[in-house]
Each structure stands twice: as structure tokens, then as C-alpha cells.
Length: 427
Image 1 (spheres, rainbow, N blue to C red):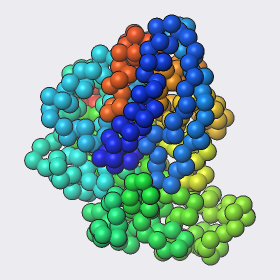
Image 2: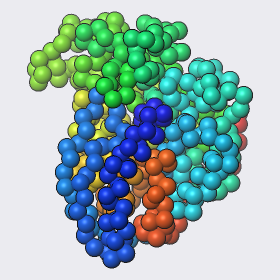
Image 3: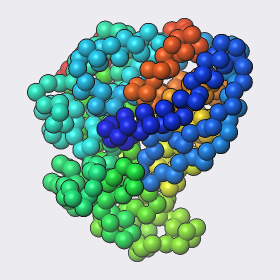
């Protein structure tokens, strides 16, 4: 869900055409006959840097004989920034298509690659291709005209920049170029995160309060300026288990624990203490963001996409604690595989009493039959709803959604008073 839009599109088409060329015919037969088909599950679509793909396995995809139709559930979908920058007629056509398939909420990208998509920000420059206009404002207006909720998606979170090759591009992005002391480094002192498939990423230190202030500031700026229903966080996490060993983390880990920060043996008491410390810093970050956003408009819905249960500790992403403390209105747990049931059940176990706030983050970059079935499986574990990754890959699925799990419209549960939102958001 959350990689640079340019290669998202490439990966989407590669993934879907490699897998679905042989699956389209089977899917069509299955939809007509309600039969069971056997498909190879793809690797997890658009992985985050450093996240291992799922092993390929064979999945029996049996479409439900009937669909559950709820009057109230979130049917959201993420829209990468590049899609918001397309010609206006294409953006409107996309919104019309999503509306016709009974989606009821859109999550447009407002912050990515170290830039914001809107003009005149106090914090970051506008994305170069967006200059001279306000794509976010026009998108929100068009979405509201179609009855869609809008949740501004802060895609990059603590990630600050992407470049195909950090050895040739010496920039770390606008924020880190101005504040190089805030860059996150691994245990060897490496500043960028290398992914063989997609290039190099820079992260700001997720523990540093100055970085927390940046994300909170962007969120508040959007809420004050635009009539959005919600803010959707992303990448509120560390880059991996080898992060972060920057001067701030070394100093404050020592102050807080009495331990010198160095690479610890896996499973050692010191390694567990470091993980606990990192998780606590992210609780502070989310608490600050929530307090700032809700102070401006208590009706704003605050959510976050988070990594799947198996990746939670690797990224020190303490989403279980965020929900235990009631810091978010809902949590969208990643379940991007061809069969979400294992991740869904694990998420329920982790969330415990907060499981009523679970949203299933599902992918349409799996075979259509698996995607449709996953919507129905999601309904078995949460009444709140689903968010689909992502708009650029869902076109082939819209007709089946209209005749299947989204055949009837639904109201989003994360609703608020639009008039109140507009009044407060325009302050």
C-alpha cells in the first residue's frame, strides 16, 4: 500500500498480469457458477521496504453462495498521490467508478516522498508536479459531491524520501536536508534503507519529538484547511529491527534505561528492553498527533494503516498499545495476502477488547475471487469494514464488486457532522 506511486503502478501491473492472465477465466467461471477454484497466491502486493514477501502457496478460493449486506460498514480505498495529479476528467471518472461500485470513503494521498500535495504548507514544500494548483481541494470537493467520505492519507509517515539510487542522489528529501540530525540510522551507521527492487529510502528518527511534531503539524494543517472527515496515518514505525541508532536514540535510551545502545543479541533481555523502549516512543508520537488533531476538531476520525501482526515487532510498531490507550478511532491492520483469515484472527487476539475498532486492510492485487472472498471474511471478524489497497488496481474488480459483496450501498460507520467539519476545518 505504501510505496512510491511510480513503481506502485509498475508493480501493480506486473503482479496482476503475471498472475491474473491465467486467473481471469477461472474467476469468471467461479463467479457464474459459485464454484471452487484453485489459484496460486501471489506474494504480498507492494511490500514495505525490508518486509519479506509471503511464501507462495495454493489457495482454494470458494466464493460465498450469498453475500452479507450491512447497512453500515466502511468501504474505503487508498488513492496514491500520482492518481490525484492525473487530468481532472480522469480523476472524476475514477471517483464515479468507485461510487458506482458502492465504495463510501476515499483515502487520498496528501503527504509522500517528503512533500505535501497541497500548496503553502508551513512544514514541507508542495510536490513539484502539483505546483500551481491544489489537487487535494478539488479532489475533496468532487468526492463530497458524490457522497464519499474523505480521509487524508499521510502515506510516508516517518519516511522522508525515496530515490532510485542514494549513491547518485545525495538528497535526503526536503525535511532531512534541512534537518540532517533527524535522520534515522541503522546499527552500522547506514543512513538510507536499501531495497533491491525499489531503490533507497530515508527515514527520520521515529523516536525524536521533533519528528513527531512534523507529522502532527501536517495533520493539523490539513484539518484546519480542508473539510476532511478523517486523517489516516501510515509508516508510524521504525524501518526495521536494526533501527534506530542515531545520537538521539543513543542518548535517550541510555537516560531512560541505564543501558548503552549497541547491537544486542536476538532474544536477549537487552534486545527486549530496546524493543519496549522503541514501542513506547511511538505511543508518544501517536498520542501527540491525536491530541493536536482532536484539539482542532474532536469530530475528525483518526485512523492508521499498520503492518501485519508478524511484522509488528520488527518495526516496533506498537499498534496494540495505541488501541489499548484509545489513541485511534480505528486501526487498519494489513492483511494483503490471498487469504486474510490467519492475519485477521491474529489481529483480533492482539487487540483484545479493542478488536471492535479493527478495520481489515485488504488488497485487490490478488486474484479477483480471492479479493471478493476476503471482503466476506473481513465481515466475519469486524463490523467496522475494510479499506482496499488500491484504486489503481481495482478497475478490473469493480463489476464483480457491484454484483457481489458491494451490491448494496452502505453508510460508513466513521461518520461525523459534515457541517461541523466544514466549519471547524475552515478556521
